[in-house]
Length: 112
Ligand code: 5GP
Ligand code: ZN
Image 1 (cartoon, rainbow, N blue to C red):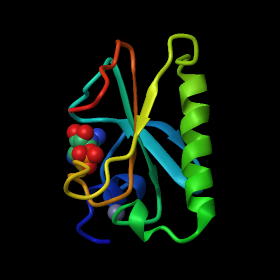
Image 2 (image 1 turned 120 degrees about the vertical axis):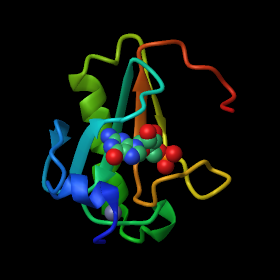
Image 3 (image 1 turned 135 degrees about the horizontal axis):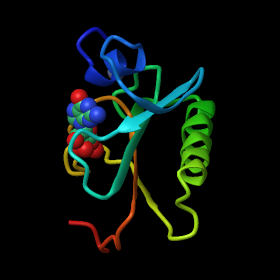
């Protein structure tokens, strides 16, 4: 996807400090963090949202990477939250599947 900002980040077209990167997944800090730790974890392949994912290995790679990143960032003791906003009512603003990894403060529930 030529005009997708997260594709550009994933493919190195925009200089980015990656928190994590492997063959399938990239992770980087959110531009507008909502918590002291706010990392976005994305598949390098473009999916407009999770609705477009048909291959379960995409979920496996995304989730296992997110768990690994949380461990590497030392978040396991105090805890963290993973969120995938999907579609308009789900609050999704960037149409490339991404998982929010949030931590570092008490996170309210229910979400807004
Ligand atoms: P959504 O609202 O779609 O669940 O989340 C999109 C997230 O991407 C938002 O938290 C927003 O701050 C972040 N974001 C949007 N554009 C960029 C960007 O160019 N770079 C980074 N690092 N984050 C971005
Ligand atoms: Zn994309």
